[in-house]
Image 1 (cartoon, protein in one colour):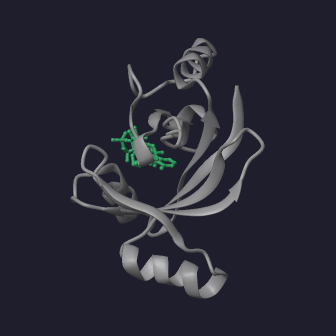
Image 2 (cartoon, rainbow, N blue to C red):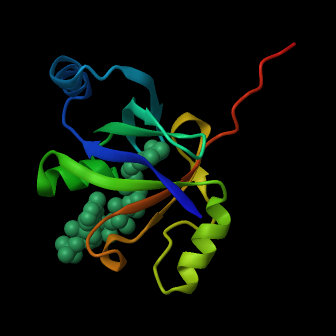
Length: 146
Ligand code: MC0
């Protein structure tokens, strides 16, 4: 079951400048940043709010790391802007299978590694009314050591 907006992915040309815009304009701070070479992005996660399912909603700012990445291709065609929306679920495998049964193309055979150790897959935008849609299961929260 999809229980939250996990994040909204925003493609940008210059991650540092875009992070600074969100900090100076809205007061949002970087919660986490990383490079995901498989996806070809350098990213910053800005936490907006916690959610009733125990997770959180983020803005995800994405800068391409190579010209052949999906985000670089999208920026070339569209310029900066909202690139995808991601829904959070406790079970990305089950939700992806259910959605595939409904005739929507699921882009990965098996979920791949996403931000902060999450497991992710994508749905084809042409099957989702023009919206590239991601499904995310967050990494388990480490319990504190006693
Ligand atoms: C492409 N299209 C989009 C789109 N990207 N429509 C809406 N939103 C997008 N973001 C449209 C194009 O305009 C085109 O439509 C058609 O889809 C085919 O696009 P293409 O440019 O020819 O590119 P393809 O087919 O090579 O690839 C499109 C596809 C790809 C969606 C399959 O971008 C993909 O695999 N995306 C999933 C991975 C991804 O985006 N990773 C980056 C975020 P027309 O009408 O012109 O034919 S990584 C991330 O987010 C991770 C780190 C995380 O969350 O943790």
